Image (cartoon, rainbow, N blue to C red; front, side, top):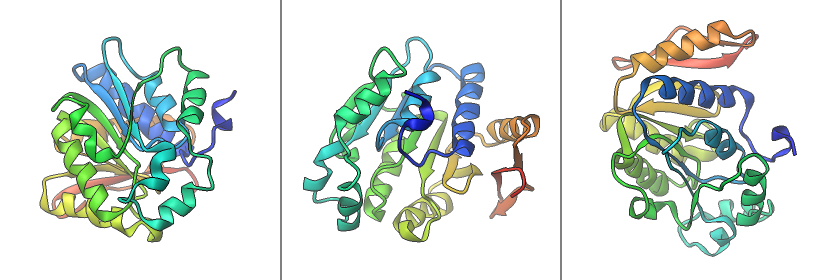
Length: 234
């Protein structure tokens, strides 16, 4: 199996964003665990697992086939994923094609994650589960509890017209709750409750050193600079 054969919406620009962020943490940050809330069929989880350091723990939380019976999701989510053969076995098979050991898997609503992961234990959290406003708010609050001081949280679908609940929850956290944007792609927003500048400068450096990515001038959101990460030619 090739990585590109795995279904999903984990685009090359975000593969770079994940890799550059995790590799920067591997060089500069203390040990910390990784967490993914919502995994689909494992594409982003596989990359995250590749950046796991010895002694760190990786946890994945997803409803998998139980989504259809969960009353916290929106009907559009149940209808959409009901056509995608979303199963825990599919995730595990894909992950095992690239890794000898599975992550810790929590099969259930992401709102239960704080019962399974210790406070202030994570350096990287990817939120890509339900896009319903209340659920994203809950996931954001969990990330704040679980992240280390300079840990990074990544939000999927923070700007699509179809996922305005996610957008509302993310910008509420930025404007009112101390979350600081670091950089954004078309699909994902990378943010922290810690220091922005070190990671932001690293992303700018990595994009400049690549032959296919670029960053634009920072956009100011109040007094917070946000960098866009794009493919060249865009």
